[in-house]
Image 1 (spheres, rainbow, N blue to C red):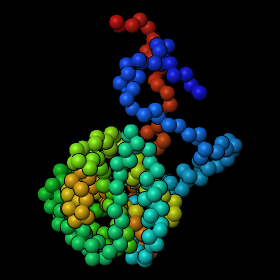
Image 2: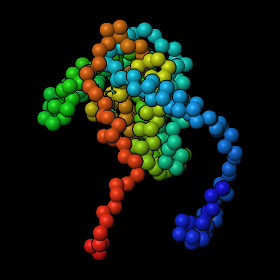
Image 3: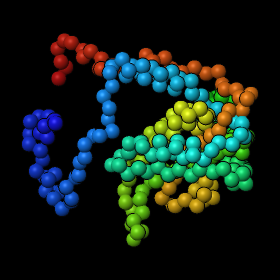
Amino acid sequence: MASRESVDGAPAADDYRRLTAHLPEPVFVPLSGYTRLPEAEMLARAEAFHDAMQRRRTTRHFSSEPVPSRLIELAMRTAGTAPSGAHRQPWRFVAIDDPALKRELREAAEAEELKTYAERLTDEWREALHPLGTDHIKAHMTDAPWLVVLFAEKYGLRSDGSHRKNYYVDESVSIAAGLFIAAIHQMGLVTLTHTPSPMGFLRERLGRGVNEKPVLVLPVGYPHPEARVPDIARLAPEAFIQWNAPERPTGPSST
Ligand SMILES: Cc1cc2nc3c(=O)[nH]c(=O)nc-3n(C[C@H](O)[C@H](O)[C@H](O)COP(=O)(O)O)c2cc1C
């Protein structure tokens, strides 16, 4: 086990111990779920997972063929394995397959999106979206057999109504969303990361608390047999990966 001394060799802060003296001792258990793999198998798995994820595409054309609820549940449960700031787990998922509710949400989303596309988008934003060919018509919201709405719990509510702070909510919920999307892709379904703007109507209609903020609408299903996707490319690895730090400039220091 690593030393509990700080990097500069100073003893662990007495102040911290004093400030936490009233709290129960943290409880630890062995890391029993971990299996060490041979390096060749690690590489094979890493390549297979990367290849699979490279084939993921956001799909806007869905078949209405039904999908068992168990698959949706497993994707949500996978999302719920995400790491989170201070382990607050601030994600909440609502899965919808009720056709009347999907239609209602589609109508509400389209009313907002019509205003967004006609009035709210800046010229720069419109230009960025143009290659994707999207507009205010959101057929996926009724075509897809499932709509999964992801909410972020901005803060917890104690039984006495007081607020319990959550930490790194956006980061934690985004990681959960990524795991959900990966799980859906891995099981052979498709999804779309949809952000109807604004989306306050979701909280109201789905009966969620004032402490929750809708983040994403994720239609899930099989792709329509004639589904098409925008012809766009991903960044080359060199454009988004750096190894270590650049060389420090040599020569006399200016300070
Ligand atoms: C945070 C976020 C918001 C998005 N919002 C929308 C959206 O409202 N409507 C939509 O059609 N696509 C939306 N997308 C999907 C992106 O357009 C899509 O991921 C991107 O074009 C790359 O395509 P790919 O997912 O097929 O690689 C969103 C994606 C993210 C991550």
